[in-house]
Amino acid sequence: MSFLNLLKGFVKTRILPYKPLRISKVVWNQQFSDGHWDYLKNNEEVARYGVILSLISHYFGNEVSILDLGCGTGIICEKLDQKYSYYTGVDLSDEAIKQASEKSNKKTEFLAEDLLKYIPTRKYDIVVFNESLYYFEKPLELLKKFSNFLNNNGMIIISMWDNKERNNKIWKTIDKTFTPKDQIFLSHHAGKGWFIKTYFINGKNA
Ligand SMILES: C[S@@+](CC[C@H](N)C(=O)[O-])C[C@H]1O[C@@H](n2cnc3c(N)ncnc32)[C@H](O)[C@@H]1O
Image 1 (spheres, rainbow, N blue to C red):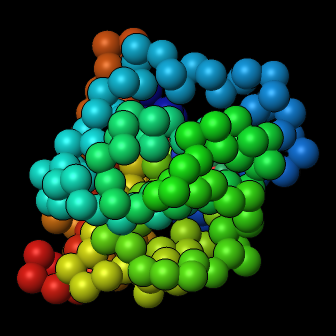
Image 2: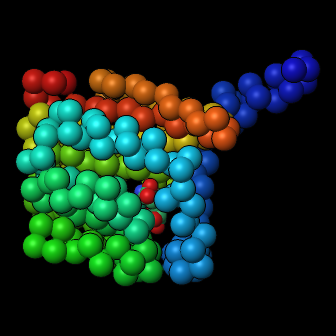
């Protein structure tokens, strides 16, 4: 790598301010109805969901309440296969929520809400941000807000793909405030990679 490229990388990752990915609700709806996000069900993504499922079952077993923030069409919920006591999926896109809602039942709800405004009506064992945190201007503020809705000894799981330029800035900010318990890097030979981290905000695992 040339010195110029190294310098560009340094400036982008260390000096330029964090900028969220911006997608409007209209575009999310369009993308979900066009099937743009269907690739999340492809082979390359399976391991990412698998890690999240393993962490949930390792720490909490099947009697677990989960708040899935930016849940999309509820892929995690589908893969959990009812192994939870309560699941709430929240997403900005009505279209994603419409598709997810096929999975609704007595212990499974999906809500079309903007996370910036949404206030949970109960507490949960786990809050999940699965590839959703980098769409927000103030990811740490959002984490702090939803950490107030965790049960004692509750856990936050965050997955973000390996976009160093943007996401390393988010990790740095989060890790200054909360101490990660698990820090997993997952790579797929197709060239994709993700960091998945857990945070226990209060209680014995913290
Ligand atoms: C890349 S998708 C990930 C979907 C899902 N978590 C998964 O991994 O299968 C990001 C999701 O974040 C949602 N999202 C973005 N901004 C949001 C907001 N302000 N409030 C709620 N959801 C939002 C999008 O609608 C989209 O479904």
